[in-house]
Length: 238
Image (cartoon, one colour):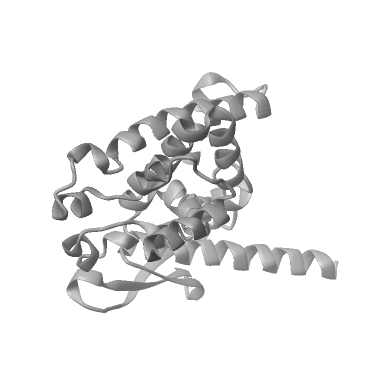
């Protein structure tokens, strides 16, 4: 009963009701959960992820083709890759708290699988595949447009934050940038890293994550927001 309530809550969030709810359940089922319960191998999310990946590539390609009429093929390919990469999809999935609904085996749960970008992004693609099978391309495209391709400027700032910050600080301000690990805490299987990013002696931002790379990315994102606010504040005073 609780599982059905959870699925219903997720349907409310994504704005789509499944005719065959078993497809949604399969999209949320990690192989560790299926193996523990001796479910047939094909009933985890991997096949749906394969299908969802193809649907996502088509929809995002059409999106770029229509929105970027002057962009050459090579640059469209590069931009599409950044839009639907693992960290970008995981970021989108967390916007709808998708990770809370993933069915994980006990071992995978204990080792932090629910917070792992690789799993969360796979499930995001599996849900796309499930919607496509259940309701067709129109509904799958609506889901992608709403939860993956919306607010791209904000999302791009997040998942490109380290490279963007480097361009701003070293390219425009001509100053050095340094990341410093401040702390690591939590049990060994579920550690949290705390990092700060400095521009010479000035702390620009701090971030936390379950990998050092994720913490650095969050620190860079906060630094970019701070620099953006400082720039807007200075402009208003002129």
